[in-house]
Image (cartoon, rainbow, N blue to C red):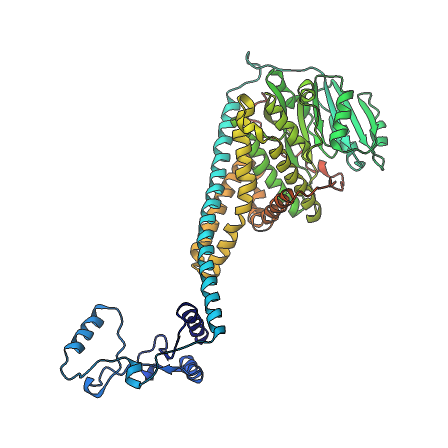
Length: 542
């Protein structure tokens, strides 16, 4: 309590240049109400030179001289009025005049400076608190808006697909030969599973080109020994994934090209399904449905939820809005002439798949999502690998957004992508992660210093909305909803890590830092879930 008095004195010294001599203890009326800790605090205050003031008992007669303490209530005003009309009272005075004390003293220069500092800090605290409330409102609004958009457009996407039926006269189909490009660098752990899943494809007319990017292990040897004439191995000096894809593109014999990662395992009908939308002449690329294969560990389970609820639900919305920003490197189908028309796969960014997709939009091509074309990928199982992967993804996406910022002013497909896709990425992939930690920080602040039940209710309400939307996304992807048990822990731990990745990527980009390609060490576990959940089969193939 006394420390609070000292803070008040410092504030008075900084604001007025004066120091008070009198002190009334809080919640104290008459001296006999001082007891326990209040009495100890009163003795400490007296030791610092304060004169403690307390009111006299109500039974004392005004003629004997009394000290009155009046509150700002109607009864206090009535009592004051009676005192003023009391003829036995000769005069009214203050405590200082009555005791002959100097009411104020001049504080030292140090006290004045401390007081001014305290006032400024308090002002900054008020500004910070107000700003936090506004940021909380903006972040919460963006978060809820994103959830609503995802749910609404996912439903619109499903209803759109349900209007089509296989064999309808307006449904084009393609069954022509396909070239599959598999860039690989030190992928001996998983290249065999990847190639076997491709060769087992229901689409039999395949040219599988493995581009060995200067591997130092047995990647090329394993590919050459597959024993199938459809597999071709092309070797090059290590030059990166974009250069490997361009090299493979030069060896492609067919007009439709499927680009895949060497750590990915494919469902038997994945290639057949992903190329069907390319039967429409306006479609230049198609994104497949990437699922997490090695989901045994908690970190991988969190990424599984992110893939289903974040990436794949986003892609449904992007298709409805015609602004798909990324065809993932794990599984994507392209028109060969469309890719060559935009200059091939650019090496300007670390997210070559996002860069290529945005370039296709700007050239007037449409990009779709085929949710029934399933590929199982291997995700990082350590925080260090996960951080490197997501840092590269985020950094490369920011590079691609800046490179293609001119699409905002375009017309046709390019303009739709720029104004819808780039705006969405800027709001929900950049701004929201920068603001979202405020929700958790303010929730913790509310639990500690405000109403804990109100703060907890808000946080759990937001969690409930996310769980409902995630459950809907899992159902659409044919995944069991029991995976939702880990979602509260994902929000507390995993998402904070992703927010920090965005912050670091943005800072690095603003400072002009150059980020090297970070490769994840593979263990060949992408096929763990093969034969498990399948996509939402009530929606037919296009």
